[in-house]
Length: 145
Image (cartoon, rainbow, N blue to C red):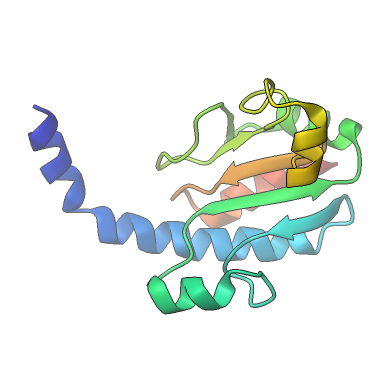
C-alpha cells in the first residue's frame, strides 16, 4: 500500500512543486510589504544568503517561508484569526500550514540557543500550499489586521 501511494503521488509531484514555488514567491513578496512584518526569510529572494547555491542546485525554491513580525500581539492575531491556513506543528502538506516554533517545535531548546539561531518569540514558519494564492494572501491579510 505504501508503495502504491508513493507511486500515485509521484505522478503529480511536478505540478504540486510548481504551484508551491509559484505561490510561495507571491506570498513572500506580499509579506515583505506588510507593515507588521519585520523580516521575511525566503530562499527565493536574491538577497537571501543561500540564494546562489539554491539556484545552482535546484529548479525551484520550495514553499517554506519564515517571517518575523513586530510583536507577540501580531503573532497571536495571526494564529487565532487564520481561516484557510491551518495552525500546525508539522509542515509540508499540500495545504498551507503555519507554526510558531517557540511554542511548538522548539520549546525544549534553551532560550539563549534559540535566540542565537534567530528563533525569536515573533518568528513564524509558513508552508505555502497549492490553494489559490489570492485566497492564501487574503487569509494572511485579514489575520494581520
